[in-house]
Length: 283
Image 1 (spheres, rainbow, N blue to C red):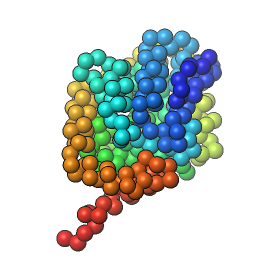
Image 2: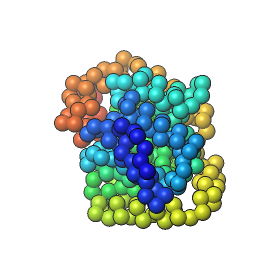
Image 3: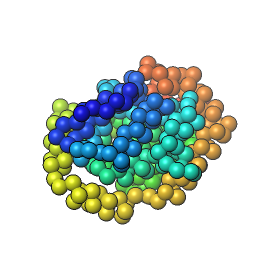
Image 4: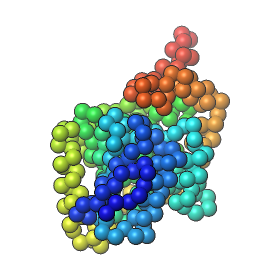
């Protein structure tokens, strides 16, 4: 079985749907990728068929998902809105819906997962990452905004207050070992072991009676996920902050230095957001 999604390659094997993000070298969360993710999630709710587990990974060796497409915020938001009802026009509410799909979801992360890309991973039930190649970050504070698609809610619950504040307001990059130690991800694994481990776990879960798995996930979600009101509030705050002049100035500065280009500053974005000229002037 395969599903026709232009920016997501899929294959179904033993109850596991392997969904590989394939939306360019950065895998930006833009119109095309959000549209296809919405289609995938809708299918998991309405007609999952034999799918018991979904594993999300990336075709790019360097980027699981760099972040949202900052040049197309209204456009990808409109696509995300198709997953919800009135008042739910945000990527955050779409990812909230992803977190509650009636199957198990696993993010397998190689490369960089920042901003909305990290929030996509956090919306999955589990995250396993390459020790050598995975990088996690929420860089929004460095541009004058805040994570607007669930990052605040997930990180506060997983990391605790002090580490969540560090992760969010430092806007820095975190390697897989640190992310594992903080509780950001389930495990950091040697890159050569990551694929085999995730496939074995996914197929093991897919072989169990599905109703018991669904009920267990729903019970844990009910205890741990943020309310829709909190997600909506973060989304609205992000939208207002990203439009402020100082945020636009910082994004323009990053854009001039190669933001959203594979050969630009994306590889070291955590460092780059802390290198704004005014921040380095002597007081």
